[in-house]
Amino acid sequence: MQVIPPRETDLGGLTVRRLLPRSGRRMIGPWCFLDLVGPLSFREPIMDVPPHPHIGLQTVSWLLEGEMLHKDSLGSEALARPGTLNLMTSGRGIAHSEETPAQHSGRLHAVQLWVALPNASRHVEPELEEHRERPTAELRGARATVLLGELAGVRAIGRTFSPLVGAEVTIDAGAAATIPLCDEFEHGIVPLAGDCLSEDERLAVDHLYYLPPARTAVELRASAGAAARVLLIGGAPFGEDILMWWNFVARTTDEILAARDDWQAHRRFGDVSLYAGARLEAPPFRARPVPANPMS
Ligand code: MN
Image (tube, rainbow, N blue to C red; front, side):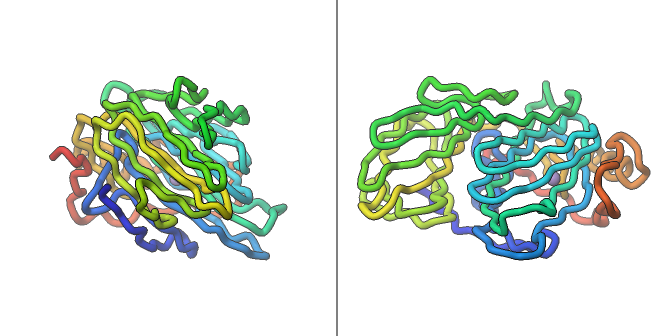
């Protein structure tokens, strides 16, 4: 398994650990961005990301602990907390903010992901989905909460635009579990908590382990002391070259420049009127975006 250690990145004063995109691995299926936040303890609200725009992607927020308040230009306000999946489809354009709510538990442990939209769907209307149902695949020695797509015949509720899977897998203490995989997908495994082993290799927490296509299963074990929690993502290798710059997933530099201009000119994205405070300004566009497709 290719292993990608986390890289610390500053997100508005909050240190996060980035696993995608990285120089050796831009995407896993359509998954093109993966940040881990926490676990953190705090007294004053710790997260405050002012309104900013997105195009060409879906954002997936999944919390292991704490709360995160989402507000967007559709007028939605959604509180993400453990067990609630927040799925935002930006399509042609949306703006949103993310903050620790005034009433909070003083804890935060979260996974934030982006899914690149395929060409045929990337200009769809923006939408926010909030799902409290937790479709769960019961496996021997483990259970998987299916966040997006399908695993072991269990389908998540959220809207998807290409074949993929996202799941949080809990392996019982001392158990060995066989997680079925789609052999047309490439996959990534990220241990989030507990001691996780695969084929006698100890997997490090917050590291990304890459599995190329043509695997039908992966065996994961938890040490005797505690259950292990693991994030599993996967999808068919994304057959399109994408360009990522700031919060945009596009295909051409012109599209990125147009989206940047529209944000700066208060066009297309709308305002996050529920957010008290100034929005983020786009950074200056300088370098050419890096092609993000691992195939190219
Ligand atoms: Mn965002």
